[in-house]
Image 1 (cartoon, helix red, strand yellow):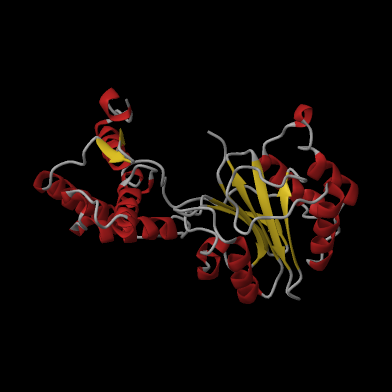
Image 2 (image 1 turned 120 degrees about the horizontal axis):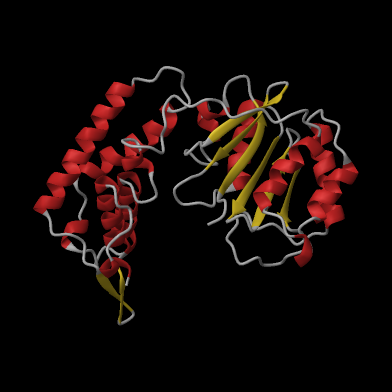
Length: 305
């Protein structure tokens, strides 16, 4: 599986991960790196990506009074770039350039443009940001994914754009306060964790209110899991979070989840869609979570067919 996520370049006197006006791009802030002179690059994700890069960009420019450039990368295959200056000048583009429909969802959908056109706008954005872009290097990078023999992962291209735009160096990731992808935090934040389960259950109730199973009614652990997942991501980039309190909340949410699992029947392994039996994603996530707790992350064969 390739890289999925949003890369945000902005100037801020505080860490981008601490800003509320960056949440339009995502809240799962995996890393923040310094680019020099107050500029930073943030790698983040949401729960239901892709983010609306235009709306998120407007909000962050309003908060920083500085230009913003963001790219949403789909499985390492392609990226949608959206850039905005403080003068309301904006551009959007697709990498690789020239594609009308890449098959992935982007918000907003960038127009098909040539490598030269994309390069010109990147140069204009860099100059507006007070940088000294390297036009030839940018053109080489933008066009590097245009042929089958020159394939490069889109996230690598996006990061290679940074020195070509004129940033002196991409610093190392800021240290995290705790290992958020390890236990016990992973019980909440992993893709099959309780945070994702709670959010997906809410979507089921909203979109298919007449078809929910008995165990899909809202349960007491759900709101607490959603809030705790968010709070864990917010705390991981602070220097001295109350880790003991966070772990206590994790224990409380897990205990309430276990209590509800014992009270309600488990999600059925199959549901019917358009007259055909298909595997129930909620059941698969529950079994993945149970496997994660027991140390065996693979669900039993009956869960996935």
